[in-house]
View (spheres, rainbow, N blue to C red):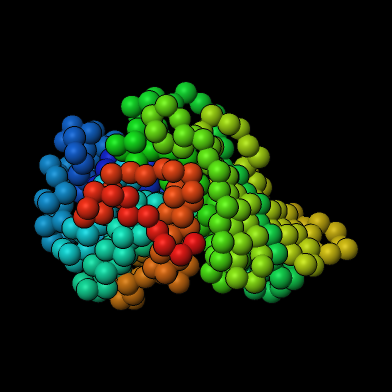
Amino acid sequence: MKHINWGIYGPGGIANRFADAMQVVPDASITRVAGRTPAKARDFAQRHGVEKALPDLETLVADPDIHAVYIATTHNAHCQAACACLAAGKAVLCEKPLAMNTREVQQIIATAEQNQCFMMEALWTRFLPAWQRVRALLAEHAIGTPKMVHANFGVVGSFDPEGRMLNKALAGGALLDLGVYPVAMAQMILPGPVMSIQAAGELGPTGVDVRTAMTLEFANGALAQLSAALGTRTDNSLTIAGDKGQIRVLEPFWGAQTIEWTPDGKARHREEYPHRKNGFEEEIEEVNNAIREGRIESPVMPHHDSLAIVGIMDAVRARIGLSYPQDQGADGAWDQPSGL
């Protein structure tokens, strides 16, 4: 299989960025789009030159011409959509967070394994050239052993209480939407499992968190100090402090194009890694290559990392008292995480 035909489920804002990035990806195209509102799917198809707008997810996954589906819905719909695609034999790239909690992520991974279909959480940050350079520097021990990570993702703006950022029914909140980025990158950088978590958060009028801060202690004693905030402008860079130097990923660290690294006692290096389009192209190419090679996961964003990330966020939510309907167990009580 050389050319990869993509379908999109959820033709919203993030899907527009995905479609723009596809313009620079060779041997792949978006040929189908579906969503809960057929009119939006038709508008998306017209805007991006997509062959067909389909009425629903069921029609999309039944289409034999589709090889992969990009799931760009609100978080609360990820699990059901991902499992439906995988069960139909479609590769899945699902927007972050992969699902609402550990139970849902486990369900998605199990479905991918049962059907031997590729599945990846769409943490595009990990695939950016700037972050690939950071990974190489860490592998070369350019700053020695990483001991601390500090990262924030805070934004200001006017947020509609009924919109996806603040609406609890749509899985809104700072942690799930923004905090997944610092958590995911700290989990990649620092070795070993998280041994303990401290967290504090402010729940807003709609019942979701508007500010959350956390400290993670890893198995080797390394620490990560992370935050996510709606309505608060933070320094959105990321710093890795090692015992022999420092790496700074300039803001926005999640869409990085510039890094600075300073070996202990030496001059600072500044390096630029511009996007070819908007940065989404790198993760799209990873999925395409995996499908052609018959892989079911990516070594850059493997299944066990998605489990580790959601486990951290489950524990943080338990500490700040933030639950969603998807967290309820069979008895109707909050199925809180154990361990951390």
